[in-house]
Image (cartoon, rainbow, N blue to C red; front, side, top):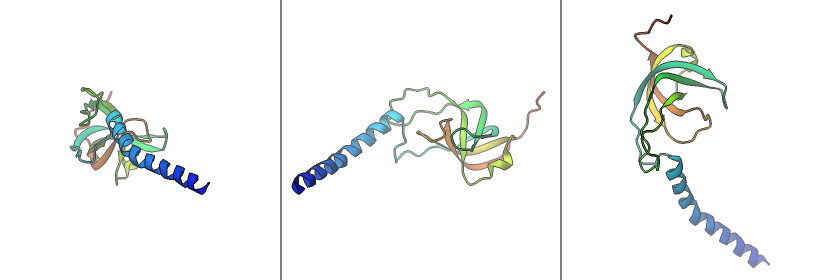
Length: 137
């Protein structure tokens, strides 16, 4: 009996060891998760910082003119990729200080699924006021 249980357990472990890399590669191709060698280019966006309670409380950047994001290398997504009007802000900055204000943000768009389900995550490397500010009527 012990031999049967040990053999079944060993078979299950071998199946997981051989199937996991293939399943991960398939997920990357379908979901467009960035491969490890992919290095994104920094982008600069101008928009308004907004606090959101969707999913987990966080700050977002709402942009007037979305930026077209090219598909990931090796993904099956055909260009053009739909633009993101909302970016989830992430980084070492106090985004609360910029809430409701027009800002210029520089950072890296992190591609792939995320917990927020609102748009791409933007890893912020620099943030400041957007000049010149347009007068609103």
